[in-house]
Amino acid sequence: MVEDKVNVLFLGAAKRTSLLERFQDAAQKLGVDLSMFSCEKDESFCAISHLARILAGPKFTADEFQDWLRDTIAKYNIDIVIPNMDSATVALARFNETAKPTAKCMVSSFELCETMNDKILSEKFFNKHGFPTFTNTDGFYPKIIKDRFGFGAKGQYIVQSDEELNQVLSGKDATRFLIQDYRPGIETSVDFYVDPVKGLVGYVLRDREEVSDGEVMNCTTRYPSDAEKDLIERIAAVPGWHGCITLQYIRDNKGDIRVVEINPRFGGGATCAIECGLDMPTYVLAECLGRDYQVGKIKNVKMVRSRRDFFHEI
Image 1 (cartoon, rainbow, N blue to C red):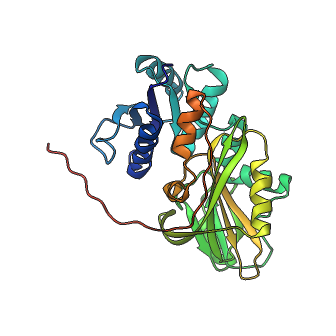
Image 2 (image 1 turned 135 degrees about the horizontal axis):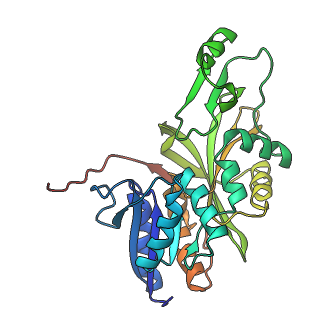
Image 3 (image 1 turned 120 degrees about the horizontal axis):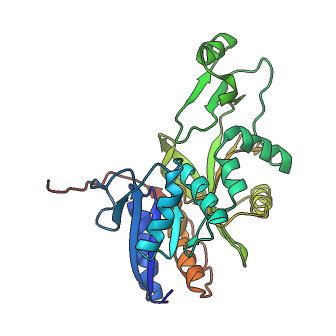
């Protein structure tokens, strides 16, 4: 790979305009000629069409995706592949461990990606490693019911009684759902970056103040408590993480923490962490180029999202 030319393929980045803009900024800072591509269900115009070439590809879960990815990497001389959806992390991790790709796959191990894509397996993982999570207490309500393969708050229900619980599960495969006590609190996301050589590079906490369909709209960053710092460092120490990881947990009014999920990819609000000084696009490009990089001082910010319109003449 020529150091001043990098081709990046994103998997499912159609709405990640701000993230791709941050990759442009990182490339300019590093003196890199960056070309970006994104695998989507078709080549229709989307929000990132002015930033990346859209490539139509199979579903990430389809068997033919593996061959498509291999051929696409060769055809477009792809240097880096970055997943942006849960199913994409699993598909890319499988590819990374079986195909011996020429491109650098910014993805965690297949075992971790497969586990984090399944809420029931995730809960077993949290319990195995001693990471606090929610239980399913007999007779306690409300409870939250989650589709084990759901994402973006899809397939979730809050029920107040046995009757409501049975009504939701009626006619469904109960093994497909994770049931936990529903205990409200402050929702916090943590973006952290793991380098195979450096280990845990850094992290940023952001309290989620407004959420739409599971994705943060408004948030404010802050420094961690000792308990949060310990939890983040213990999670990051689990072997197999690589790149940007997004941890989510809930903190109650007593300060007790319960882990909700870990997504081994750029989270929807990861640009907030980048703005704070955790410049993960720069780390990705530098790691690919074999260059050293340093983490600067982390600042705190408030992020507020608003609508932005894109137009394409047809």
